[in-house]
Image (cartoon, rainbow, N blue to C red; front, side, top):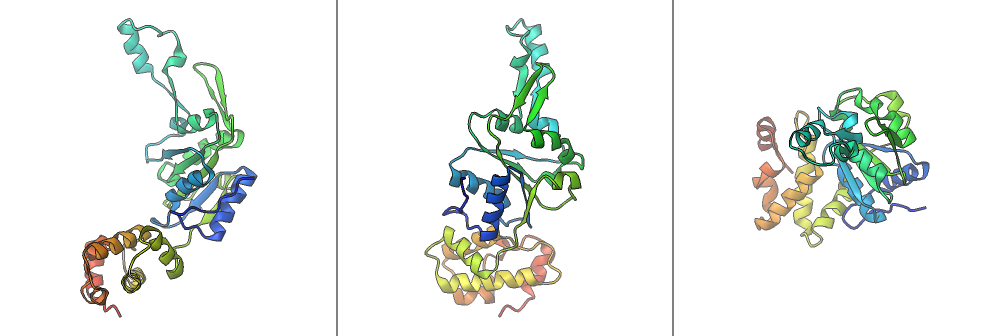
Length: 270
């Protein structure tokens, strides 16, 4: 069995790698939760890269319906073609376009399918996908064709926990919560991007970063990606590490709300 062991560009904890491999072995979707910036979306990219498979991303929005991921029947284009005498109007299949789930099922090779931010859709959305994710098939009524997965895709689903997902849906998934990285893991993550970063600069930046996250009333805690951007800004700006806590240079890279900025500027970083 193929095993996911991370990639050079993505530092995964042993527990996360185990969850990915269990989901693959049991042929179940992997549901990933965690606060923004913990690498949920990047996980799918890393799995695809590590296993040498194509990645299909289905970005979920508040208006997304389950049907959008299966197929769409372009009746307007067919009507337009009929009015202007275009050929092939009688072939309905010509106007059927597979959605992201449909593409994954119809692929000639196993792919990784990312259903990103499933909790953005309405409450019925996950339940509307139960049959398709269980049976790995769906029916196109207009052409009387059943699209059945040639190879069961590796399905990774992310959620920011904006809404509770239905129990019936949760029962069909393997679940993993990505904890926010501690200092040791965070240092590894930053060094993936900047292997030659100066140790004192990184240490001082991380001190400030974690202290900001610990401020009680902070509205938007800075994420991993924002720390990476801040370290980059500090390096590009040639900021001496000894001045980071005193001056908080480029702090707007890390703090994005007025109320938070006011609190941070009145905090004594030691």
